[in-house]
Image (cartoon, rainbow, N blue to C red; front, side):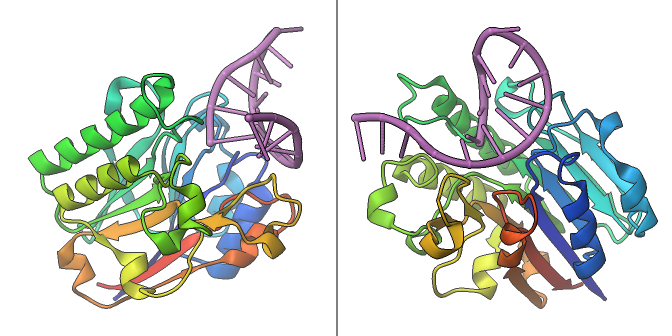
Length: 262
DNA sequence: ATGGTGGATTCTCCA
């Protein structure tokens, strides 16, 4: 059986409803995980999604900021959320499919501008968030699980347009990369995207601030798909739908896809 | 070193 999934930081699910529908219609993943919905759960426009066959949704939301949702064609059971680092933000939700696969959907804090927790509280919160993720997965090692989301870190040199120029830029600093690696290791997570696409520059985010994002191509791979070895050991394939960054009223993130032979 | 854009909400925060 094949199972397909996409993860997409949508930067307002209400404003972006048309392109979410476009993605569901054209690409039709079994499951779509969204981050930065920026909406209370009861204001997420679910009707159109349901009409396309996505009749199941689990979500966490708050007014204006953050928010995560899992849209699914398949029945999915809400198995809770965790408030890592005690921020009181809607940044995580988990669901379980009837085949027993658990899906974690994360929106890791961006971390502010300065990569120094002494002067920038947000950077400390980002590191603490990752540390608590690490400890949680270490204490309860996941099985038959997939973790996706905007992790707000581009770990590899070829996950950014310039490793050297981004070493002191939040999202690519060595301390963040180390925290992400420890979280990954603690859960036994395999980076599915990079297992499938091991070579070459790979981005999932391009700033709104570039004059021409496509020509400048100063991207970063902030959005990730991980799986536990019991899943990664079977076949899988991945792609990033860069074209979606050029759709009408786009998110600054492109959706990352993975298909699994379960 | 700076400012550039975009979204939700507001007398500005966040990314």
